[in-house]
Amino acid sequence: MARGDLAMLMQQRLGLKLSQKPVLTQSLRQLVKLLALNKLDLKAEINQELSENPILEIGGDLDDDSEGEAASPEQEAADTAASENEVDEVSDDPFSEINLAEFFDDYLDAGPHAPAGEVSEKPSFETFLAEPSTLSDHLEWQLSMSRATEGVVAAAEAVIGNLSPDGYLMASLDEIRETADVSYEDAEAGMVLVQTFDPSGVAARDLRECLLLQLRESEPEDGDAMVIVRDHFTDLENHDLATIARKSGKTLEHIEHGVAVIKTLDPRPGQRYAASENRLIEPDVYFVKSSDGFRVVLNEDDLPDLKLNRGYRRLLGKGQSTKEVRDYVRERYHSAIQLLRNIEQRRQTIRSVCEAIIRRQNGLLAHGLDYLLPMMIKDVAEEIGVHPSTVSRAVANKYAHTEHGVYELRFFFSEAVQGPAGASLPLMLLKRKVKQMIEQEDSARPLTDEKISEVLNGNGISVTRRTVAKYREDMGIPSTHKRRRKSVASH
Image (cartoon, rainbow, N blue to C red):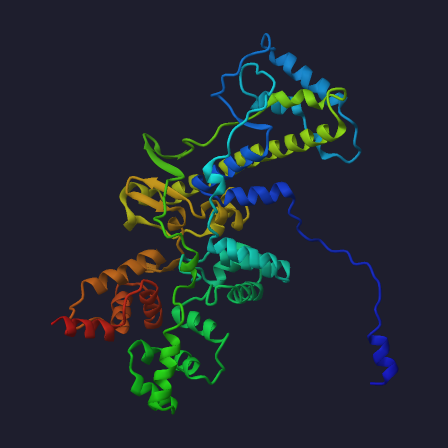
């Protein structure tokens, strides 16, 4: 290629390109955040908003003195409309589109109030307590600092939302793809992106991958520890160092050195961000049995009942305050109304998802775990007319109280496997069957993964030996060799 041709290719050019990109408004971002919160976290978020926005207050329990006679609803609406008309006109001010009269009717507490006075209170001691950073917070912060396409970012967010407390990825790439509504390539790229974040080893799908992710930051590809984990992990689990040395061609001294390096790695990288105290779980919903089936009851006990403080409304009048004050009050009213709308939208979304769960898992609620049916997030999303990521956030970190115990809402979702007589069987029940077979085995002659696979296939459940091994490892059950060795040691 001639130098002139190369120079032409390297020239910078200006051009216009039309494209459609989803843009999250501030209101939508807040809704997404609120939807993912459980009841306890929502209460903390509301209390934070109450401390920052003077327009919001807790209604129903206030006993303020009245300045005069209570105004009728018609007079309230008229006064509010008059206040709006006196506000400085701003051509592109979105606040001007809000019907304040309507929202005052909906959210103002009953009874007149005196003007808001200055209250001198010492800050609560909790103000000075640092809130610990969770694993999700830490990863989301790193994601916000990363440069990636929208599809990869969406996939990475789905990966972060499906991590166990230990930091392991609990969803398959297909589930990540469906949840984030991205391509398989973006789903994989999102997982790889999160795997580059701190703590090292996070978002691994199993222990071997977790160790490899940590080793790749400090070990060369032919390092002793890297070779052991990458090529001889099964022998490492059995602590068969002599076999590793023979297969790898390394000396036993090198193998022992590699094992010493492996012992310095963290098999549970997410635990460093886990709270040391016991986690408090409070049901977000109740599945209550009634005469015509089950119904959803949202647990909203002790959640603040938010109202708009009308004492600030008079400041919207042009002659009542400076323009800076009126601008501040308008912005605070807009923020308060936005919060009230999003809390209500969160409530309706969670109710819709839970009602769909009741329709699909009625047998489980009535008779117990053995009646769990396969149910995918995308199916519920299609039924209630929302995006799968909305359902995923609606069930995240939330619990339901049933007659058979308290379950995480994610528990009700399980992919299907081929069951008896061609019927589908929930993956969770299949894992339970594998666990029961191992618990009932002869400890002197433990079942192999191959034998478990044969028994299940004989019962009409199509599953391979490799799949049985994966389920067993997911449940933390040792291999046949280890179970046999443990049985011999105990005798």
